[in-house]
Amino acid sequence: MAENVYDLWGENNGPRNEIQTLLFTNARILDGTGEPPYTGEVEISGNRIKSINKQGGVGFNWNTNGAQRIDCRGMTLMPGLIDAHLHLSWNNSPGVNPINMMPPEEHILVCVEMAKLLLDSGFTAGRGAAAAKPRLDVVIRDAINAGRFPGPRYTAASPEITATGGLGDMTLPHIKDPGLNLGIPVSGPEEVRRTVRELLKWGVDTIKINLSGEELVSMGGEENQFSDEEIAMCVNETRQRGRTLSAHARSKESVKRCVKYGIEYIYHASYSDEETLDMLEEAKERHFVAPGLAWLINTARNAGEFGITPGTPLTLAYERELEHAIETMKKMHKRGIRILIGGDYGFAWTPHGTNAKDLEYFVDLLGFSPMEAIQAGTKYGGQIMGMGDELGMLKGGFLADLLLVDGDPLSDVRILQDKKRLVAIMKDGKFHKAPENNFGGLRMSA
Ligand SMILES: [Zn+2]
Image 1: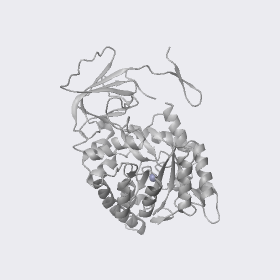
Image 2: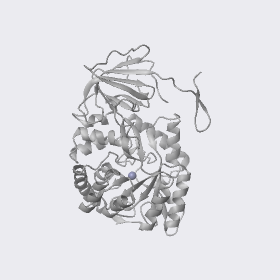
Image 3: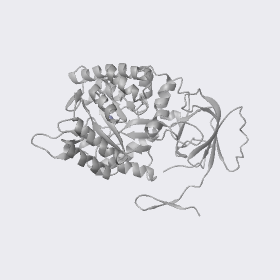
Image 4: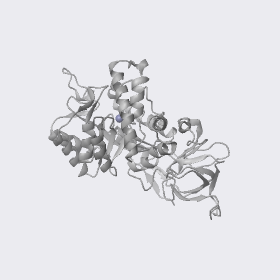
């Protein structure tokens, strides 16, 4: 008898799946290592890739008794995409307030919906970049892990910790209710300490701290917030519990502080100057940068119908930042600093489900080769998930998170934006989307 699996609510989800073997044959394998694609076979056993055989090698003599076999007909088999800056609780609304003001009961349903949308779009993992309310990321992470709802592998982020008056402090002089806030405003190291401890208690994997501003809300992207004492407190309290940190950091000073305090996940980094880049390059083994280009581009240019009109001071500020971000990212790329896809999706003008657009931006704006862009969304994604030795590439022993794509993403990365081209989506050895036609009876996830 196979042992039963119980979820975190104590419900019996039935017997653990028995190890099964599945063969993808006749695939054009784009493995994410940077090697050019090759024709071959991929053997899946349970939730992992057991082995990969290059055609012409010594393989092709597996005993396929009992194994399910999928003839890929020369389609591309590649690792699932990974979003380095993902907010499953951003609800595709036209602004920050509708995210904030949504009651938690509706909000967790939105997270369920967004999680499925991400997986439908070929994203099999994502790093949480901040939650709208303290437990949303935690609850959706656990529900996905328990197999209750389909979604990407997900690390749970805290809400943004912000300084009083900073990005995410939405209270008014006459309405101080903390429920108005997107972030959690704090002043002084002791308030930081208490807030971090509480958030860790609720089970987040990553503490998010806002170190710079944001044009759309409250203060400019080049303005800074928090004292050194407050940042040090945040980092120390997080580290001693073995958790990780990410920062909203647009200004050069905020990026320097990430390096100084070892905050590993740096979001935006648009205004980094040469001195900042030197520091970052020196510590590049430790840090990841996700510029969030989709947010800049679409807020500046494509949010007119939502009241953010191109040509106004706000959008001109974003145009200016975009220009800086592009130049900065090109320089970082030359220096070998890891730059990852993840565009801060989840607003009406950057809806979840369009996340693969980032690959196009990396190619068109940052001068990445298609292969480099794909690695920014696969290999390095595995690393930012803290799973670089088992996620983000197709290799023996790696987790079976993969996409079967009709077409060649190396000739045009935009193919990955077309859900119809994603013939199969597999996460953890199970199909979220199985190939149609003659592939009946395959293992399906929830
Ligand atoms: Zn964000």
